[in-house]
Image (cartoon, rainbow, N blue to C red; front, top):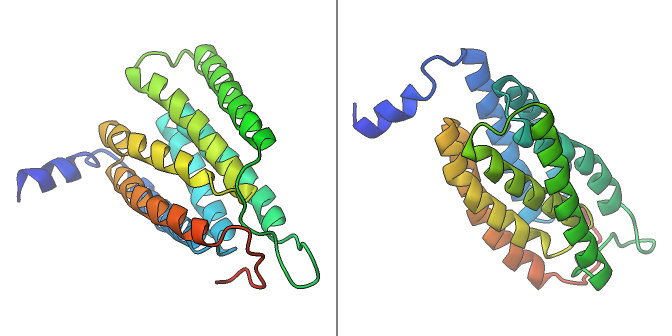
Length: 212
């Protein structure tokens, strides 16, 4: 067996089998969710809800509070986004893809800063400032909080936040030993780039179907 495979499987040496299976399921549904998001397909939300629910459980066991809060927030925002995406602008058309307004960009900044403060307080309370990854978690949490909010609002700029956060998350999760999750974020980065291009082509075009 090559050193790469030996290292890969060594990450899961002492991990219960059921957690490995759950991580794989979470990765699978997470991948589907991002793919459906790229396609501007409403199935982004039910698949995302399944994935985030799984990861909330896994990350709680690992004690990764920042990551757990990200997924808990995703879960809640998926319900909100499901509602926004299914709203109609007239009798036959649903909410279109648009660019963020100046007001929404300001709110994005407030969400980012507010998330940094909130995560810092949570980590401080639970005494989790014992590793450099905690600082990176704080930043990626803030980035993803903004990205998820913009996606729920169907704003093009959400992809920019996903791309930045995903790029940071690839080596971060690899370092944490969650190899499958790291690989998931690598795929997410690629899909997010294509997602941005696809959404840009469909700006301000109201849809007649949510299952493209």
